[in-house]
Image 1 (cartoon, helix red, strand yellow):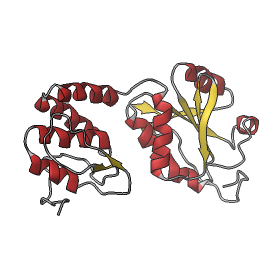
Image 2 (cartoon, helix red, strand yellow; image 1 turned 90 degrees about the vertical axis):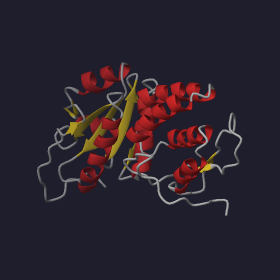
Image 3 (spheres, one colour; image 1 turned 30 degrees about the vertical axis):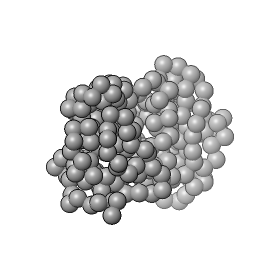
Length: 240
């Protein structure tokens, strides 16, 4: 969408909450401090928007939710280009919504226009990753250590918590299935597999410590607010 101002305009409040934080409404005067300087210690996303931009309103809640999920590992700011045209001009922003990610005082990634949520999520996670591993990434390594030592119940508890907080975390789900296999609960593991939709990409189930022949787990799933035990469906034998 072009940045030319159309005839109709309506108010739009950029200061929406993101988790326990606030989206930071920046100006040309605060851009250096809130973006350039802050990005030297934590990645910063700048959402270039305008009150008349409908696509901006579509992408805003998606971006805010994804940033909130990163628990402070990345900051979200918003710059109204109508009130602050100088920065947009300097950065050669020609269309909005335009989203730029800054790290160490420099723009490192970005996109223009409404994108699929999966693409926006990848963008946010990539920036957050510049801030070091997340709590769930650290927990995954701890869970894998338990798993390798055949401490399946301890590993299952860790992977279950990760899956509950990240319902699309295929790595956590695959390890949950592995844990149940290690515990001899083949039916439960198979039922978890039946809840995962195959979209072409698969992740192999590690077979170490497991003497069972189970198919690999598809990488894209449709479980939401997962509680693996409660949401188990009727067993589907994928080998039939």
